[in-house]
Length: 396
Image (tube, rainbow, N blue to C red; front, side, top):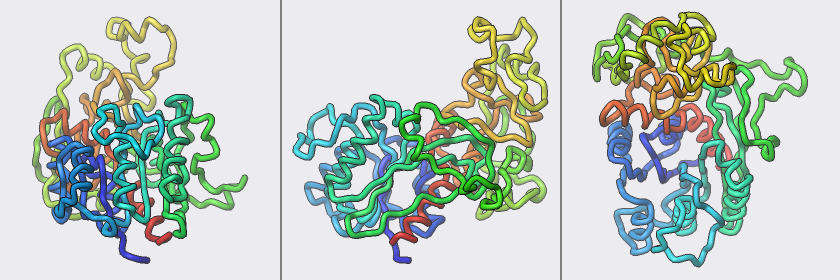
């Protein structure tokens, strides 16, 4: 396997980079506009040159020959997750100053200028239904127009050791003449879940290789909520601390791996539930599958009660030790998802959210509590970055 250097655009707090580095890829440059996320990235990637600016300004500096930026021929892999809204097709003769330019086009501008050997683009499943699925097809066509072979895969993070139901879309590309990587084969069992809006891309879902029989696939066990967070100290509603001592030794290899390289437990703090929300939290039973339908009538949210059915069973849901996390989003908000701790009357902490994403404990998140939750929720799970990085190195 050859050495691979990487530029991570739209790097966030570094989830994708974290996984790529674990795989053995050298992430030497990154750009992230959000200051708090960029600071988190710097702290956890001390050897990386982190830029903190609009990607279009970064691209303009590249065109102007700024020697502080990576040059064509220095970057083997351009990676990142640009938002796809507004992308309507890559015009190679467009005006770089045009404010209507989408961030996907900006990503492709950098690819065209840098000419990396490989490209890795990540996005949310909503990309597949945006404009009736036209956007991913245009991205693939744009990459091919720039001299790459490209393909799309839809990956479930739970298949790769993440204790969470999280679907993500990846587009990978290799310069013509290079081997195009294979998407990683699932290695963990995970409950069957639905990916919405992907009907036209069903063939792109990366599935276990069962070949119609369990004899052909011998998966590792599902990583559960308990596997991920049962070792973390008890805290109260709105409680916790930025730093605290670890409790007694971890209970399983998942927790041991999470703790590796960390001497202090960071970010085990949770958002405070106001009185009504807290009363609902206390009233949700501590049992598998419990949620808003289990609340007494006077505490059931009126906007959910109006439907009179179980269309939203995860709202005000309580996690359970043998289950998995719902998709971690940008806020631990009971109206949105199942975020009540299995045994404690509170929402999950930033650190518990990070464990659900597969972040190592040594990653310390910068900024106010709301920003830390948002950084974690926006991140690519590091284990996904790792398995993709391994496949890139194999292809190289």
